[in-house]
Length: 251
Image (cartoon, rainbow, N blue to C red; front, side, top):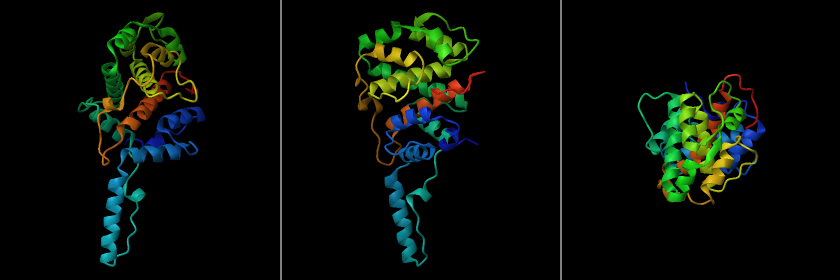
């Protein structure tokens, strides 16, 4: 059974939670419960829940059968699989019978593709040709036994990382760098070694990824523009923690 977001965040340190809270624009004290509640109502429509609870309570009073349904009781916290599946479908990166790790890769790559489409031609050239220190990234992720070393282009890094089993981390970290920089999010703590700062240098000024790149959604649909960066952060952080012999360290 897939975990809920609250269950996924068990064991996260304060720095990890603070970064995720920043991405989600949580104004109150950032903790697991607040983050899970925020994601729940980005995924579900408050408008639909309010309409449904009003209707149920109205007819219960008419029928003299007291019932006080609330928005909270009508909507369960989404599972990690709910979010992955929905986000992949929204970004047209869905494939039947895919594993969880494959979905994480598909989602991360879809974000990268979307970002590349929104770039100007010169920005794409810089993204593909600028060098990244792969060894620093591998060491920062505490992943032993990889064949990633020395300077290489972002494109080469993505390909080699996938072949070496390091693909989820590199793809999701690249996507995270693109998303956070594009909308001007500065995380409270250094999220990942090397790659996100390189991305920020490569792609130029903030604001190039406009809201139009995300399409539009109705008030009855999940707010994927806000959910996607948060989900990518969860993928990147957890993929780093899943690495063999990787000690739990702040991102």
